[in-house]
Image (cartoon, rainbow, N blue to C red):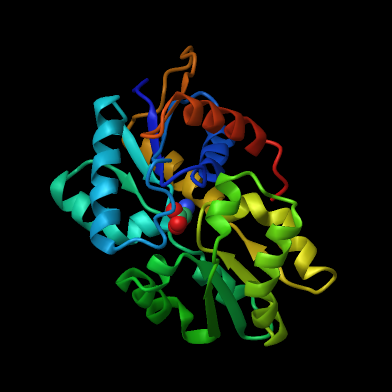
Length: 261
Ligand code: DGL
């Protein structure tokens, strides 16, 4: 039994799409969420910069007693998870990566689309993922240009969001992709807009966040590290961007519970 919180990190609000799955699956667990906020978006930054921010954020979560840390950010995972595991041997880190394997298995057209940040798509981690699981299909990938910022600015449902999404995913759907993998944790917040662009075409949208929450549950179970029965969970929201941003994180977390994906 371990009542310390689960730590979740992202460049900003995106990791709240993971937070909500953790809340749903593990309602008795305290969670401390750290969304950088100050340096977001990470997707246009260098590997070294992203790595440095991620190490700093992990330190913040460890200082608050996190018993496990979810890198709720594909970009940060690709840049830092291997080095973090080396630096903190034995500490449980759960990373995020696009759900390419189920997408390939599910696709009937043999064409799957992956949208993620520029930095993630350029990473070695992505190249390895495609090599490992992309064999059975043609993998089309494109950066979700500006998507993370749309979410940070709470512009979901605006003509600006629809135009940006259409520009990125329309060419991939036109080429026959019938499965769309959300390779950035900010993108589930745009799921309504993504579905509007897809319209009545038969395209499955895959969000890997529920699988990450299941992995966390499994690790806590194995390590005998779940919160005790009578534990009253506490939810903290932190950033390097100041108290106003922290309040927005809390409000967005609340809103995420009603999100339709
Ligand atoms: N949410 C992040 C991810 O999953 C990145 C967004 C960004 O900061 O560019 O990759």
